[in-house]
Image 1: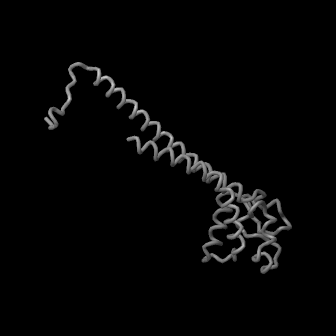
Image 2 (image 1 turned 120 degrees about the vertical axis):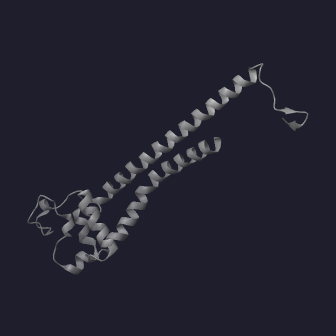
Length: 164
């Protein structure tokens, strides 16, 4: 029972460390993925970026102007961002930078980090609850042992080196 409590405590510490590590890792990873974006549907990185931008209502890493630094933007030469950057309310949006009001203004990095931190906080709370239950179990076991050792009717099972 004690080992489970120790393991839970270590798990909580690992997740607390992960919260601070996530932001740096997300920044590095997201820049790499944006760099490899090619706009084709079969490409996993392109699908992932489009999905994140649609689901989180964001565009680019920090904002929509980040797309200007990508190879995809330079190769297409159409001065636009992916259609996944278009606001749902903008029905005539074609991703053009000439109409920034049709695009999501907020970048995806901060939103992805926020989502991951929310998920990790739920895991940490679950681990803390598990550790609290373990501590409660150990406390109950100690109380039972203390009461039994003071009980005059309590007898040892070991007599003369053999088990009864």
